[in-house]
Image (cartoon, rainbow, N blue to C red; front, side, top):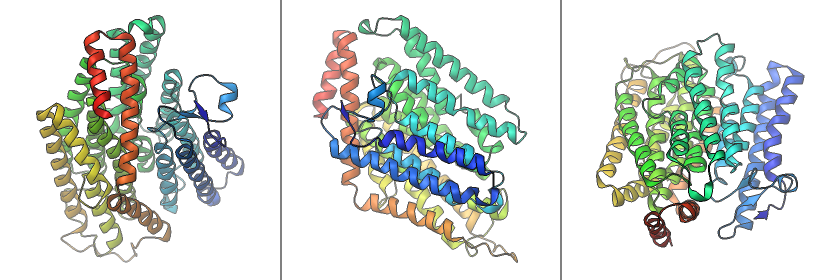
Amino acid sequence: MIELHFPWIEAAILMPLVGMLWLSVRRSPMTAQRDALVFTALTLALTAGVWLDFGWLRTVEADHRGELASQFFSGSWLAVDAFSAPLLPMAALLYLLTVLATQRTKSRRFSFAVALASEAILLATLSCKHPLGVGVLLVVGSLWPLWELRRRGKPTRVYLLHFGLFALLLAAGGLVMAYEDSEAGYSVWAVGLLSAAVLIRSGVFPFHCWMTDLFERASFGLAILFITPMLGAYAAVRLVMPIAPDVALRVITLMSLWTAVYAAAMALIQTDVRRFFCFLLLSHSALVLVGLEVATPVALAGALCVWLSVGLSLAGLGLTLRSLEARTGRLSLADYHGLYHRVPMLAAFFLLTGLASVGFPGTFGFFGTELLIDGVVQVYPLVGVAVVLAATLNGIAIMRAYFRIFTAAHHTTAVSLQGRLPERLAVLTLSSMILVGGLFPQTGISSRYHAATELIRIRSANLRASAPAKLVMAADDDVSSAR
């Protein structure tokens, strides 16, 4: 285990906490957005330093710990590897662009101080490999939406029910693991409890009600920041995938596959734009889970590529819809709004990010989707057909929403709806990343394939230590094929 040159991880986590304290002391709503923008930009620079420093120190089969954390903690409480290193700058970029694109009319309802605190918790979660640390941080991070719903006077019963059950299952699974002998393998109770907790956090059917409820009742910015990083998939990689037998992974794959197709079909018939976006995001996150739980090098590499591409593209799509709501109010897909002539930039960005999320050629999502489908078809041909069906339905839903929002009758108003400079900067940033990633995909794909082989190596090592000989032979076959 190698230490990073500079305590990038600790600095990246502490920077938004310092920003939260700064905003809490100043308490000036007029300058809160500007100050939050400075701290999120500094956080992005530090997370980029984590990624670059990791690439500089990269060695085979090694992860890299924070310099300060290595002096006080043992194990992997704060450490990055090939899997988590690019997730940190992606999460920091989402926060920066969300703060940047927030309208002044929304700044009083969107708490920048609490958003910075949630960013620190998110970065700490993505920087943690220890199962106990990941579980605790996932529970702590789920308190932000609860606070927001209560602050806005909205009902919290649905959210409390789901995340109370999530915390209970997570704690129960952890306790069962603590009392079991890891060398003999974990029981079906431990794996089952943790898998159920992951399914709830990921919003897999029938545990998806909290997600639609959150998008309807909380602020759009909070819902985007809380769900787009796909922490349910991160929990699956850290908590379930290394110890789960093949049977458990098949169950998660089938449930995720059904969710992907179901959510894509639901996105087709929605009349509320927030529910449309929620089901679209739910379908894509379920597809990522399908690739993760198939656990072959190609499928896993495709899922990790889709994770990054969907995180960027759907975040851009969500910010576009959020900007439109700030101008026109809650949008309905039951009517045609004809907004293209008023906001052509947002219309083009809606189309670009939407098509990138379903793997349109020329975007970064194209190669990830191809790898995901190819890897799944090699193992489960019928599952691969269902993945293609879900992607097709998502594409149709996106085009339907585009026509409903931007075409047909011309929207007339005495107030200009043109985008502001911060929104244009956010649009340009995400558009450039999506297109550059599609034109020059080799670096990103090789990085994700390296991460996939490392995750499979960890899983095979755990199976070799505790699983029956038949499972060990299967794990060895996966490693040899990855090499």
